[in-house]
Amino acid sequence: MVSILAENDAPCAPIDLRPYFVADDAAFVLYHGDALETLSRLGLAGSIALIFADPPYFLSNGGVTCHGGRMVAVDKGRWDRLESIAQMHEFNRSWLGACRETLEPNGTIWVSGTRHVIYSVGFAMQEAGFKLLNDITWEKPNPPPNLSCRYFTHATETLLWAAREKKSKHKFHYQAMRAEAGGRQMKSVWRIGASTRAEKEHGAHPTQKPLALLERIIAASSDPGDLVLDPFVGSGTTGIAAANLGRRFIGIDTDETYLEIAVKRYRELRALPASLPPA
Image 1 (cartoon, rainbow, N blue to C red):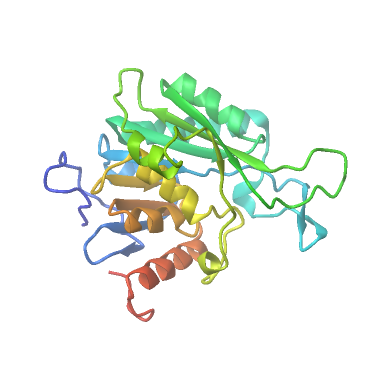
Image 2: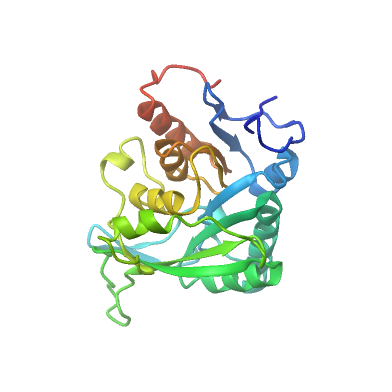
């Protein structure tokens, strides 16, 4: 059994799910499995200060994208395929509801998405009782071109930031964000480049987010020592950002390939030998 709650946190139900990886100090924990099932078994109710979620965008249904200047089919895997709009919305309602249960009373959640999914996410948040705080536009300086020449080039993603409930007194480090913005109030449009080559050294996830984006989110809306959750952790960027900023972290993913990348990135961050077995 593993306890990832600090001594001053509320007690948590025993964890009966074996972690995929646990850091020596138990401040970085990964689980291999379905987010809903895993969350239901971890007993995290009321213990999470901040959630970042990058759920499936459901683009692997015959769509195309640009890769290396060529038009290629989008096929990220079964997890990204859509059977119906109704199914997508029910999926968003389910995982958002499970995440809301894990949040502290004043905890917040950030969700990233494109036009394909973000409107469903926002509506599901309202249905679940979240308090919407901001919609952030993440502008990509170098987006892939639109090869069909029938649309404007897709150069942004939307981040929805919401508190657990209307009466929540959410954390926001206003002064730190003001300083980062050069002494002015930080705007809701963030121009941040894509993940660097170094961030993909151990392998890349098809929807990998830049470390700078996650570090800003975590620095803005949590405190050192807080517990951060990512239910769709992918290659672990949220966890690396959390570790860099002195937060504790739990990540969940269905794909062992990406969890292995997350482990390698964490070991590199902590200068741990790659041959060490998981804790």
